[in-house]
Image (cartoon, rainbow, N blue to C red; front, side, top):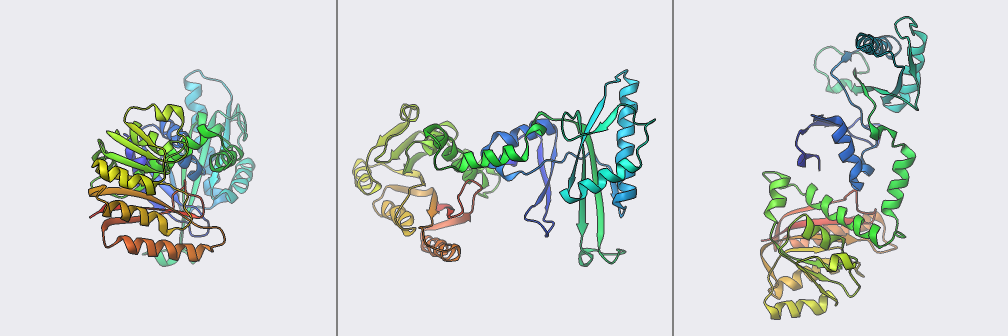
Length: 375
């Protein structure tokens, strides 16, 4: 997703190992724009827990209570001096955020014990009403990964950043959790269902690894004749028309499409099952080069079955790209479902290549997304 945006470069990632999180290091021309982008797309907002803006200051092998606390205070004092030189005597209220979060309270206590009132006139620390954000990220490298000198526990590095507060900083963990619940809810209305499905397909096509770049891959799909199985209420169809710029989309579903989706140019709603639609399309000589299916089916094998039947009927063009959502039936364990997914991928290997299986942020726990091309 990040690779689509100008001025954003993914540098590296780091799995701390002790937590179910990954630190993703990204270079951005404008962190405020990046933060806004991350919160504007549901699956990105769910995936990103917190954003730490760093400015290049680093301490290697320093202690949290002494070296790190002193550096944090030095940055606050420097900010105070810069503002004073600009005749800006407004109070500075700083929110301190740290990774891992458990070091935050200890860091604030260490800063408080060394606080210099003369250097920090009009400066305060508060989690609310803040004007600036101080970020401290602690990275631990195990001893076995260190070449050269290291203490018995490995190496510890602290990265720093002090920036003006962003509008997105006001989004709380509670807000994110509620957003996640709303986004995942089965009880959401038709508009929300369209939105959720729309971003689900966007995430799938964004995360599909294709050379030379995700953007070039998506552009290669432009102008496609697409078939959307289980289309109602129309989220995937809308994405195919709006973003992929498909020349035509056959939306297959006995249910109704949202009026706004059905009225989109290029959309043909076939109000039938895929079983009945395939022979009709074959008789009309329709050739599809993009097949997407998020159908709710009785068995996980049915998704691949319908793709294969469409291929045998001559409905699929050579090199048709496909996106299939496999859904776990109630009562199946996670391990048995994963084995079933592997079997379905194996079935496709005879007719498809460039196969990838993903557990999207937009997928529920019992869903996997399979993508590839008919070879």
